Image 1 (cartoon, rainbow, N blue to C red):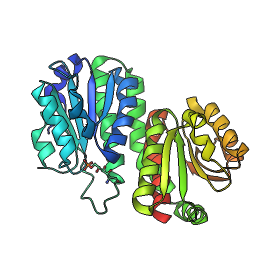
Image 2: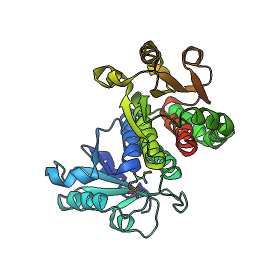
Image 3: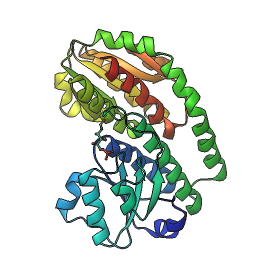
Image 4: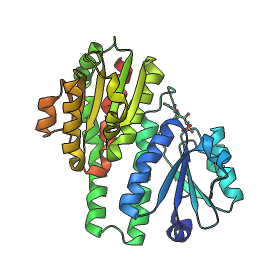
Length: 309
Ligand code: M6R
């Protein structure tokens, strides 16, 4: 796929970026939406690839479609790409499998090189996709001048620190397992996140459904009061992702609302988030990082919880 260099001028001139994907790859696309909008100031739409082609989508020569796929063979994602190509859009890809159909049919893009899929529940594919999307957004942002050199360097240096930080979460495996064991009885789970961690809430819920066969819903935390709050009682585990600074106060009031209904709060909290740690019944700490990179850390305990449950 060769990276973005060859097509960068077309990307810079694009009116909008449409991301099309399915499942976990769609969730990484939602994280990508925040990254491209925040860093590269590019309008982004994230589409379920399976719906895209049935909508007679408004996409044309001035636009870019970015397909995300681990396997590179997902039929709906391929169909979305072909639809966009017919309408003249530039087709980019983020794909794991070299030589796959999606990789071959893109104009340009980046391989995730996450290694072969071992189990069907996508874990390393998600984190690798988000890292690649961060790097793509940064590359576009740098060319557009929408991030300063200092901010660019800050994020890149923080990316380099992530393996060590992820390791420190993996080192808490016994703690995460002990929490998970408390909740094997639960027939339903609610996952709440805000901002760039809202897609992580969706991903946590998907992982639990897929490998534990437990019903789970992911929600933007503020939407809880528009319906799902009716489900919360002392049997309902609510996983709250409290990882970004600018949404922290709001998350604290969400936790208070859950507690007021006797819901059982499991918080994924940044170290040093004392208020959340005080309020939640169970806490899994993740190291501090740049706000835009928090999904790469907050998703790890959710993957482990699904595995242990
Ligand atoms: O290979 P793809 O990324 O295109 O697959 C898309 C989805 O089927 C996939 O992400 C699925 O949701 C995961 N296996 C869930 O863990």
